[in-house]
Length: 325
Length: 165
Image (cartoon, rainbow over all chains, first blue to last red):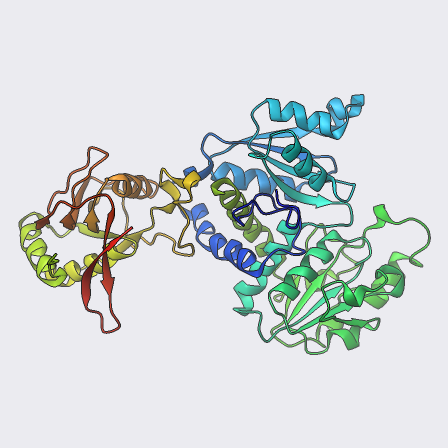
């Protein structure tokens, strides 16, 4: 674990996947390239390849998740790994064990990879640093979402989806819409879009749901901020919707979900402002009638379910790359 | 050292294979050089079924050493039913036998062939696994420090290139 790039080892290879912030473009592109052949594994007679045969992958989900945990599990199993899902709510953590004690115990069980989701930003980094300090640096850590900080595999699968439908990133206008304030997905998306060279990145949302200095989030090149959704969606190629994270909200950030839908819900009428071949993405789970209208979610421009399928291949690529490092 | 001419070797390989090639025979080239040889043989043998290709990355035994996934983005492509077929795996150079082992594993992920043969242009010795070619028109002994690869130039001409590691 190097001090400057905690995700890279001394040879400059990916050792952990903690964040897309600062991840070099060539590594990002390499993961997307590797994911392409993995999409085809599901179509074989034998839906498994042996790259992680004999490896133990521990899914450590300190926060609830269905889609992410399941797709990580499928990805690891298609790579022939043994997957152990820890049900944290009924585990030692509930009895008072600290995070790092849990990690030490799992390391003593010869874990090879931790997939970590935690409500606290920085938890996966803490684990990676702890492993490096205790001689466990052969164990790889993948961040499956930490607090408001990052959700790198979601960001990667979103980039894979964009590249799949739009071929490259060079001439695109991409809008990220909604609750950016609470969204680790948005942060990972914005860093990746900037790294991959998307020329126009827009953020659309009410002032109360955008972080301060949001325009600097993706680096010095900046991005355009809109509070009027219709104006912000004009001529975009990609609309990336975010979930309204009611469970993370403290205080009155919004008048009501109905009011939010009126201003920032993606309806067919608002989507008509975008290019006619624009794609609509959503990381799930969707709040229908809050941030997205069912007519759009189930419409011809939505690529929300392909995102889930691509997510498996992208997570396979990340795990295969880490295991080979 | 004078290296053999791949075009001439392809011709001799096709002549050797012809008596044992039937209507249900399919050729599967190993990325990348093996695919070129398979395409050449396909024309010479006048086979109807298109050439398949396999990437051995998923099954290599040196993933931890960085051997797998080097090229990326090259899925295997088998445009026929592997189940019950007579498959000829085609490669440019036969060396340790590890690539062939990986190619057979990859092949079997798509079905159970009736019979599998191996056709290569050059056998350079140095086997580390019990693998033998069914047909091979040229054998030469090379030290482990040297790398023999098939190359294709812009006009499609194949040639061998020998270099030090």
